[in-house]
Image: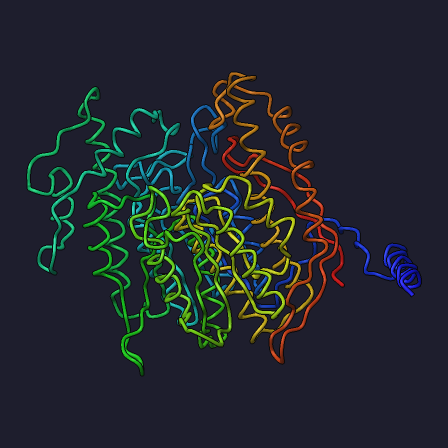
Length: 592
């Protein structure tokens, strides 16, 4: 009998290997036809040209049936020092041309907008940290007023009551960008330390004015003048504070415009850039901007119209997801949040100003996710830094078991890696070997932790809403799959392994700077070759995991599943000619 059973098992294995089991489907050419529905176009002015602000927003928007219409890249591109400039003269985007482009979309009948104010005011996030005056130089000569451009644009968009406009803004981080307009690492460190110094806390409406906030930049918590960084001239601090005052003033002006009648369909979403847990220079800025956030009365009390949350590079993700939720009558969802690592009550990294749990809680409120103890619609698992270094493997094992349990129960699950790399590659290797990665609603990790939270929840909530209430289609499934594959493959493979190898090669073998391939100039074809070879090796097991995965395709009448097809990567690129991030095209086979 035992021999018969063994023969039967061998025969069954042979059948599975020879064709009766689902086979890998060959990836199709990219790009594929758009998943967007007729009439669902969003005019989108990105923060800049990094992948988080361009192709990843495209994937997310298409996963909800939207199409993104964007201006030419040259109009919003950022160029670091020594790199080719836009229009042969600018290192930043061009607000006047973007202003004209948005008006063209309005004339064509567009009624959905997601607009970066940092781009429209300053030509991008990086330049918003350095510009000190209202007048912007135009590429063809002449100047334009940044504040007047935006005021005129908002007034024009407000004329159509059917327009829905999301405006994205930011609280300036503690220091400007290294390698832009001559900024050095030494200057960055000096200014970040200066900005992190505690200031006197302003409290109450009378104290929290623009003038008072800016006047307090130069003084410590006790009212004493702060010492300027040693070894630098006074111009360093003067320009730094002038840029902060300009940026805060422009943000204040937008809030004052939106407070007027006629702007009820506008939404303002402000992100807090790299920060500090201390009572730093941002603290009064944040309190001042919070004071100007609009609310409206609802049946259950005041409802938030404008928001101020941690994270900047995830602003577009949050805006496009919330736009979809508002359009489709979203009523929220019940969630259970579970932390693994026992440091949820601490900032996840040195650039956060709040404990991790607080950042998660605020984002849950933004998406109307209601905490519960049982019978949740969705689960959010968060891996934190290990409280006990000797228990790292135990934390990972607990996380893996929780993922397996929810997979068996067919429960929608979001995974956030907020460990800031403290587990090394062990957690990625374990998840690749033992978890079904393609079954996750969303995943994010390996960035500043505030951004990680907003990214994972934006993608996960968008997917849950589609599965629960939306009109799901095969193109929407495929757009969603790209959002997940992009996050997993870049974190597990590029940021976890390949990037570290490139950093070593560039510094030690090539004598270059991984933060700028143009100074000194490196062979970019050689760097792409190294990138492709490294990714081909490291992505192989993760791609096999995805190709063996199933995924939730509907939750309307109970969980329904489909199976992933083949996954292939091509057209690798370094968008800013630096090693920090990469872009790539993701080809997918037919789902089964």
